[in-house]
Amino acid sequence: MKRIVIANWKMNLSLAEALALAQQAIRVAEDMPHVQVVIAPSFVWLVPLNLELRIKPGNFSLSGQSVSQWPDGAYTGDVSAKQLSHLVDYCLVGHSERRRFYHEGGDSIAGQIKQLLAHKITPVICFGEMSQSKQSTVSSQITIDLRKDLVGLSAQEIGRCLFAYEPLWAIGTGMAATPDYAKRVIEHTKQWANEQYGVKIPVLYGGSVTEDNAADFGTVKTIDGLLVGGASLHAKRFAHICERFSGHV
Ligand code: PGA
Image (cartoon, rainbow, N blue to C red; front, side, top):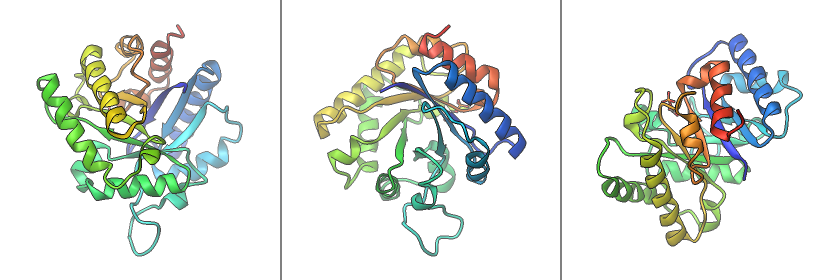
């Protein structure tokens, strides 16, 4: 698998800004064919971006930021995996902001994953602890939480997902986890998935990733990618992050 860098634009950018930034992200993908570059805009920009960005390299994709747990029906405000299926290759699931502000969790996460897989969209399942603690405590809490998110999913389904380790205390705070801390949690999670389900899961790191720390995360070979929020809203910063993480400097 190529290393992957996902830009989570959250609820930001006008259409003109989104188009301009997406064009720059395409240039980054063209310059770095060994990296999968993914942008996750607001739902409303997915259609115009798909129409405008006609020439996309194979290592460039769009992602959703969330999805409904239901296939269709009377769910005001929701967007289904079926509706997303011709627009995106990836979709975030259970981002901490969805869990915190929209109370997503438990069965709804597994439901979203199932819907995405049924429509051939790769789920990017976000997980992470609330506060910094001893690594062993963090790792065991994470596996308890993940087990709830993955309830009812087969090993084969879990093997088709990406995971993103995002400690909540690191998101948007400017206080990234150290690469060593992230490495230990990620390696423990991978080992747990292997023992529990017999699958090798790719795990990304997210939380205050910047152009200054991307190279350090890049040196950890078990970190399969990055999920970038704030810094991905600036074309140059995002390009530097991709370059430095992938060692393409
Ligand atoms: P941040 O956000 O890079 O601004 O910390 C990461 C995320 O929320 O995915």
